[in-house]
Image 1 (tube, rainbow, N blue to C red):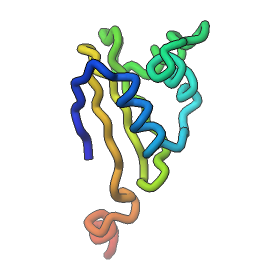
Image 2 (cartoon, rainbow, N blue to C red):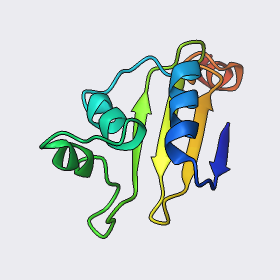
Image 3 (tube, rainbow, N blue to C red):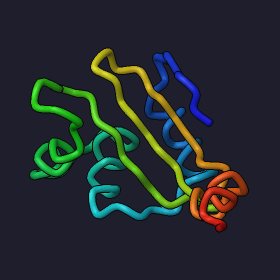
Image 4 (tube, rainbow, N blue to C red):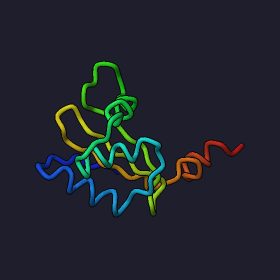
Amino acid sequence: MYILVRTNERAAVLSRFVDRYVNGGDPRFDAFLRTFVSQNPAPGDDGALADLRRDESAVAAFSLYLRAKAYEGAIITITEEGDLVLGLSLDDPETHPRRCSRLRP
């Protein structure tokens, strides 16, 4: 499940999403928190987050795939326009009934 969020309160929205749903899981998570939640990046954080860009033409857009507290995963995407796409994986893709039925003989 994904939701597009356009807000002038990006840091507050991210803080609430992270506090409620996210349980870390990526070594660049701390750089993300410093840059986008506390808005106090450390030296090197830009480089760490640049590794998350989906393609070479992206300037500001990236996705961060994380562990979730009560779901299979959490995804935070920052778009080129500065909007957020927040997502939660509700089902484990390895044990989803449709996937399992395709694997059975």
